[in-house]
Image (tube, rainbow, N blue to C red):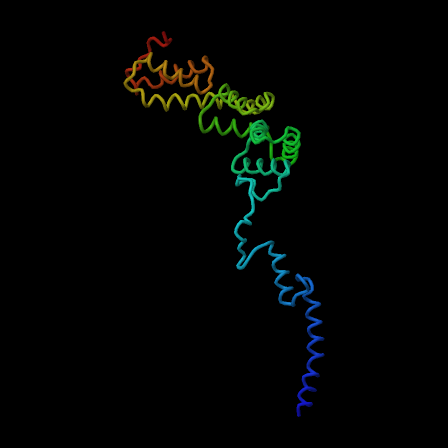
Amino acid sequence: METRRESRRGAVGPASADKGTRLGGAGSAGVGGGSARGGRGSARRRVGGGFGRRGKRPVGDEPQGTGDPELDGVEADPYSVARTILLDKLTGQPRTRAELADVLAERDIPDEVADAVLDRFTDVGLIDDAAFANAWVESRHRGRGLGKRALAQELRRRGVDDELARDALEELQPEQEEEKARELVRRKLRSMRSLERQVAIRRLLGMLARKGYPGGLAMTIIKQELDAAHDEFPLLDSSGLEPE
């Protein structure tokens, strides 16, 4: 009987050895040719990029960012950095090429890189100074009541080329500018019921000058609107139109 038990154990041995050989081969990627379980674990660790259980990184193995939320995760290639900066600045509102160039310079982007990326953004239409100027003139004239002179100054401060600015300002017709100036004067007159005519004139001229309207046009409109408002504002008599 002892001989029979030894025989059975002997029969199991080769099969186990053969199975162990197969598993060992599958797990040979592990350190020292470990078991299959060890091999799969090693593979998971390699794929996980150093993460421990439940996807947590080991202490002291945190990724080092750039310190800038805009650029974290972007490779430290100056072209990629420049593109990321421009896309961020263009989100929500258009900007001129000059404004964006200033931003890149402040972020220490090399000039040759900045020029190349700005050229590319211009080619694909993400930067369009002509469209910017047209939209700016329309919006600021309609919303703020600015005349051509003030609009030209604003476009210059934003770095729009003089020729592009002139083209945009030409879209603003003289009758539009005159009507907006009349609207501003009428609105202002509502708060001048108790003022003398000369005081009202000076204040209205100052307002239209700050808005960018020429003096001749401003005086003509003010005279006409004061005369039209004589019945409503009796203290604004028709004498002494010219300011002292």
